[in-house]
Each structure stands twice: as C-alpha cells, then as structure tokens.
Length: 105
Image 1: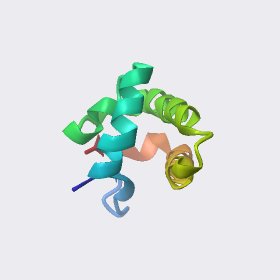
Image 2: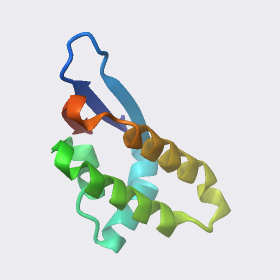
Image 3: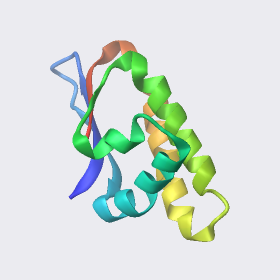
Image 4: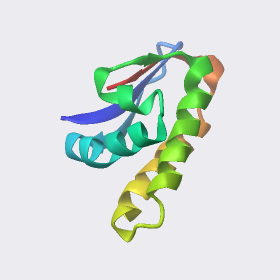
C-alpha cells in the first residue's frame, strides 16, 4: 500500500492527476512520527483518505514545507526531500478554479 494524492478536475475532458506521496513504510517510519512531533493537522490524516477542500490546499502545502524542513539535514532523507519538493511543485501548478476534488490516501 501507499499514500497518494488524487486530484479530479471539473472538466470531464481532463484526466485526473495522481501524485504518489510515500510508501506505507516511509509514511509510518518518517512522515507520520515527524508530523505528529510537529503537531501537524493534515499530514497525519493522509492514510485515512481525507478529502481536502481547495481552500485548504495552501495549509496542506504549508505542512509539507514544515515536514520537509524538519527532515532536512539528514543525508538519509535526501530522496524523501526530493519527493516533497516534487509534490509541492505539482500542487503549486494546479489551476485551483478547475479542481473539483482533492483526495489523499
């Protein structure tokens, strides 16, 4: 199993966007303990499959930045940091007015 973000768009002609986030092992071993230590709201919910309102996306992205900052500095986390950077890049480019649903799980 893994954690991913699925973004559906209002236009039926547009394919959904699938953003892989983490394997279950990485999520439980690194993401979740760090998120809980930081007191994050959204990241600990990721595997439960929350639906995120478009207006909450900036908060989710802010939490990902905080998670990234907390994990930075350890060379073992380099690939994880690259993944978070890529996720943030993908989310930053979203035309929010065209998004109908954001599911994480």
